[in-house]
Image (cartoon, rainbow, N blue to C red; front, side, top):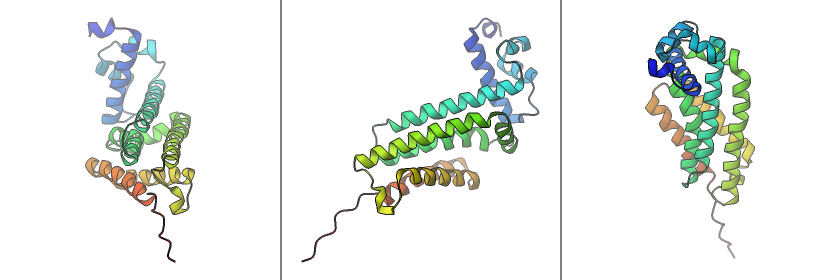
Length: 206
């Protein structure tokens, strides 16, 4: 505890957010108190208030941290030196896989989602736009390189982004087993790439 108290402000803030994430998942937002978070983080309650004014502010900061992580991981996935199928799967994992593991598997998922929408809707709305842009840029770049041909299905890049995100969201709502969920994301990426694979020119019959 002494080491935590003497740590740099950034380290204390990180410890608070780490503790809050764990407790919100285990006990829900309403049942978790500042005292609980301080105890879990092994710092004094007063030290928590030096970084955050309230539990609501902690929750919002945690949401901002998670949104930033999604954007960073999605951008890293898009930059992978790998086939498009793997890049798409990694981009889907960066958002949907992360939230599934952190939120959906919690027994308090419904409450956490309600708190998210109530306290941090703007954070996730902005993050969703950035995430969609990363996905769109990945698809457009793959189209320009000839990895896929969206025209084979009569859709454009924007429509493909909407479909991928809607499909991943649907999987998130219907699959409860982690292994199955992550497998479904990979299958979604594989199916998209297979459906959009460039077709060989038709042979000309004289």
